[in-house]
Image 1 (tube, chains in turn brown, blue):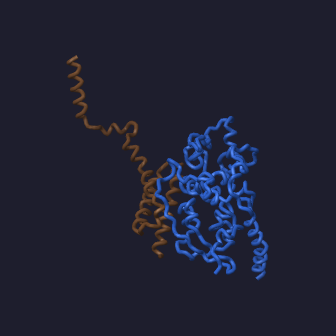
Image 2 (cartoon, rainbow over the protein chains, first blue to last red):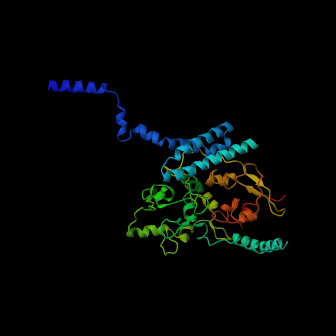
Image 3 (tube, each protein chain N blue to C red):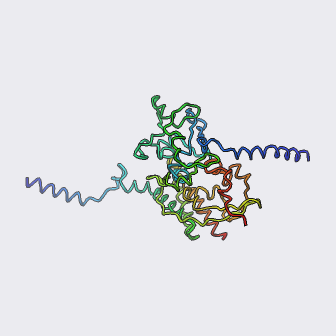
Length: 108
Length: 263
């Protein structure tokens, strides 16, 4: 019994010293991979949740959001057909509104 | 010159006809009806009849036209069984699991529908069929205030009186937004001297629509007064006429827009 316990302790110690292998990522996607895959959605939400406040934003804030929309567009274009169709339309509505408000402010 | 004469005669005949049609108000149960046809190569099922009166009592315009992404023009959204099954478009709510009033909302589509599911398909794909709908217009709207002239539901009053509570957030679909500070109401000059000016209420419009429904698609000009539009444009379904006369109150309720007292 004593021998078994000491072997278990040694094995645990050895395993704890082995660095996390990148090979681990080759199986099912870990939380980090899933997170990276869904990052576009978090970015979409962060950008488009601001439409209600667009009238109160500065020109620089609006330009920044438009720029983020354009960058996100290229990521959404790589999605499967269905989410691509839906989210491109939703993103376009956000972008168009920000561009509209920016134009309004600049003409004022 | 003879060509000009022909054009003028044709315009004199056709314009009043188009004008008259735009002012005809359909029966209340038909008002806001949208027929969604399948795209070429799409399903062989009957077209879908979508009734605005049922959905607008439960959800704001923005929830469907912004958050879910339904286009404002008929048959341009690209709804398919696939988008519905994957939880987009109609499938955002009609997925067989989402609840409304404690009751599951039926699933909209199946990719491999069995013959016994035909009744469910017919709940939406109902054009040209005798389908017993779960919600009947007369029963559903009997307690809602109606316009005396047209018998259409006065949705603004219905909400103000607490008779309908359109939801503005669909968990998992809508974005978390801060509450909206509406812009001030403003007056639009009427193009006819005898007609009172229009008081446009941002508050009334943003409450249901948000900003993106109208700007910039329907009202693209960012400078007030730049675009001149007339009742002819509106009657043809442009500008205010994209909603008013189709889903929102009709064009014959002049005083609801032309509300500024004549000086």
